[in-house]
Amino acid sequence: MRYIDEFRDGELARGLARTIADEADPSRVYRLMEFCGGHTHAIYRYGVQDLMPANLRFVHGPGCPVCVLPMARIDQAIAMAVEHGVTLCTYGDLIRVPASERNSLLKAKAAGADIRMIYSTQDALTIARNAPEQQVVLFAIGFETTTPPTAVAIKSARAEGLENFSVFCNHVLTPPALSTILASQPAAADLIPAEHAEPHRDRDARLGDGGDAGVQLDGILGPSHVSTVIGSRPYEYVPETFAKPVVIAGFEPLDVMQSTLMLIRQINSGRAQVENQYTRAVTRDGNRKAQALMAEVFSPRETFEWRGLGHLAASALRIADAYADLDAEQRFPVAPSSGREIKGCECPSVLRGLMEPTDCKLFGAVCTPENPMGACMVSSEGACAAYWSYGRFRRPAEPSAAMTADAA
Ligand code: SF4
Image (cartoon, rainbow, N blue to C red; front, side, top):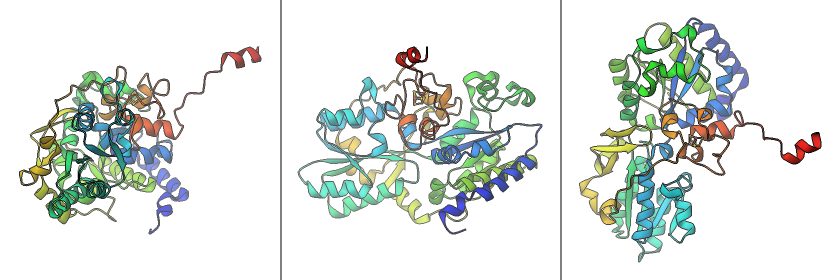
């Protein structure tokens, strides 16, 4: 296949769905975590879950870069703009994410802070070049996919001698997050037996008696864009350590369905291997040039906080010592923030696969994309936004008092 619509072909999708239904063992439950928010959106946008047999459930993972950024880091970015008067350059997804005290980058901008929305790291460099008297900070976030462009921006600034440009680095790494989720699975003996588990929206079946211990998984739909950079090799510890299969999956609906079939075949045959469905973009070794760039410009942080997962060792990057003069955290120090979630927001549990968005009491009632209470409803990769955007879980509007009276 060469063109994008071929990966959305309904006839092929129905054929794959039939094969999945034929091969799925009806005596067991399949719980497959899609790591990336891009997969979650494909599943709900194209109705992939509805094509699956009843005993197969997709569990949403933490692969949404905006969602996993803890509130404290947004507080710090706002403090840089307000206290140090820098021009803060941010991607659009972040601008409406709630910060502490019901603040956000958008509200700080409305209150006078110089916060600009950009589409690429090059936009931030252009802003810095055009205003040499103004300090410009790039609020850099994301997984391994977006890290190389930040490295390019840092190297460009160094090469040009751009002294008014720096980076607030929040880049995170995929494998430590995956390890944390797999390591927190409840013991098999703690789970409700499969024959009693209703996989559709049955939170208890997924939680088991372990309560908040973690989510039981049978396989992983691995990241696609991240894997174009790091390759499939970094996931090889998953079968070795956790005995779970991984299939690197593309983001189109047929990619997700084919990857699901590959996982089912591994699970049914008792295999646990890393397989690559997304061969049109991912190799075992990934993009070595991008990896070398990242290794030159960044160093691992000892620890970093993730929303939902807590502080994870060696799970994020800081700017390497050789480029420390371009590190906004050093140039514009701000006090740490405790960054507490809005009461009732279940983003941390949604990001760990412990809850579905519709399990959150605020979903659709108080929290909507127009009035988001948590990052998962704002981000274009957030699970709550996926559930809401495709209209599949919207509650019908309550009839107004006037309509009720008319009806009477
Ligand atoms: Fe948070 Fe809103 Fe999602 Fe609830 S629906 S978990 S409040 S983002």
